[in-house]
Image (tube, rainbow over all chains, first blue to last red; front, side, top):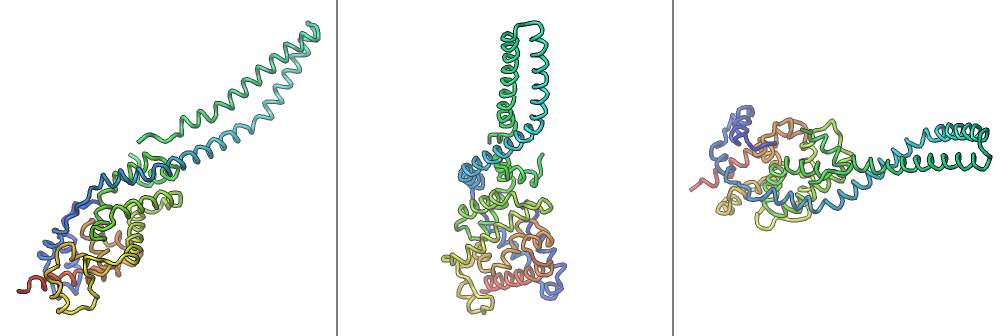
Length: 144
Length: 172
């Protein structure tokens, strides 16, 4: 949508294609001369700056909402394999407790396995806590 | 470089950079269109309102359409609403069927800006888009959501009216 082409081209083009205009040709040059005087005195960049400033709060709100939607989607998606992972870890911990119980007193074996379980719980928590941070880092709108 | 349509998709998610880029691309044609259509009045208000609507409806933008067409459709609808609300105060609007006497009366006041304002809105829309914004008849028809034949007809009547005004102006 440039304004590069001379207005006269469009006017001439119309007159050439319009049978009515050919029958009674309009004063193309005079019309063009007048239209060209219709200069536009407007600071477009200033208008854009003000428009952007007015829209910025709504943009920020929309960006935050979009981020929340994405984080929720990613968290839900990552929760899907969680039951299988938990079941696998439970089996592994039971097995580890059985082995530890064979070589250690019951109380000591329980402490070792519970420590392992706590460590796994910490890893899970850290992983899920990192999801929103990673999504936010990737999705936050670029500064203007 | 992202296309306009890609930028609109990003804008729907609140991407400020996308809006800034669209503003940069269309600030000149849009502001000039509004200025010519409105005769310089309330340009800033309608400019902001146009972009506000672009932003608010970005999620519903049909990617099969051209963004520029959509943008100008929004702007034209706002301008039509504006004309319904605000009557021109400094520029006298002549009825379509005014005679030579009416034209003579306003002859002295006709300048380039008034010349456009003297055109009925449908003809003014076509003249501005066609002559000042380098758009084809098909593009103008898409923006105005009317057949190409209607664009041609409005253009003919617009040119005829401009010719009439120019001749009246040149009359000694």
